[in-house]
Image (cartoon, rainbow, N blue to C red):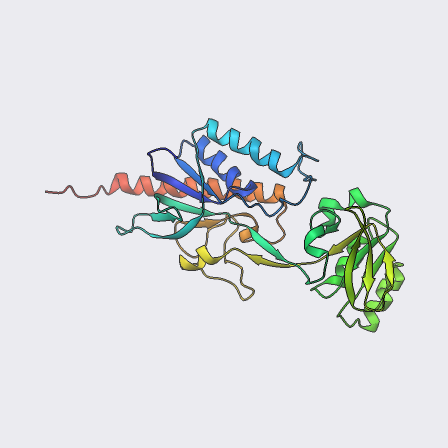
Amino acid sequence: MSGMNSYDVVVIGGGAAGLSAALVLSRARRTVAVVDAGAPRNAPAAHLQGFLSRDGLAPQDLLALGRSEVTAYGVELVDGTVAAAAPSAARTGFQVRLTDGSVLTARRLLVATGLHDVLPDIPGVQERWGRDLLHCPYCHGYEVRDQPLGVLGGTAEAVQHAQLIRQWSSDVVLFPHTDALTAQQRDQLAGRGIRVVEGTVQQLVVEVDKLSGVELDDGRVVHRAAVFVRPQFVPHTDLLVSLGCDLDDDGWVRSDAVGRTTVPGVSVAGNAANPRAQVITAAGEGSSAAIALNNDLVDEEVHAAQHPAPKES
């Protein structure tokens, strides 16, 4: 980290959303720092899919490319974790304190801290997550197309998820696990040839570092090449809450179409506000937030030019 610690915008979170915002802001000739703790949500995945021109690239390679691009425009990359952020004493911006004790000041903040996935407490789930225990069919469905697929119940919207997964394979089994299916749900599943296998799931069966099936409480093992699950999404909102940002009834930060929160000067982008944002979506949200932030700074500068601060005697 250089000696400079005062910026137009401090971006907290260096994933696709944060780096995309930093790129746009730095090209708008703003001074920008990106603080990143180095724990991306998609780290377990071998590839990212559906990102135009970067389909199949390893997630860490996309981040490396992004970091290289933004540093070429003068963005300061700060490897670290934010301990706290608050309005500055003069109320003209914000102070961001890192766990190592260093402090950055910013006229505006962009929070792009993402979310974490809460997975079912079933042996094998954590170990296979992002490999052959999957969530997003738009990210991974094509790679397991036409294979025997499973969908784990016990989480919200499992039946809907099974109907979606059916788009990629005609051999789909829903394991309700701890869920009770309605008659209508069973009819809808049967109508599209999705089998239902009752029983509590005991574990995912792994052979030679590869998922091979789902074991039930009575000892049955149903062969599957990959299993999908709809996890609970928990946004990283602690920092936003500490800044006074409002949350909705589901615990997600309230923000407008360009990421402005209810606290002036604080914006949000990516999975921290939008659970459905894939990598390409998050990058787009970062870009939109950056443009809005720059426009806001311009408005502030126009006002300051018309109403200069009184000179100290």
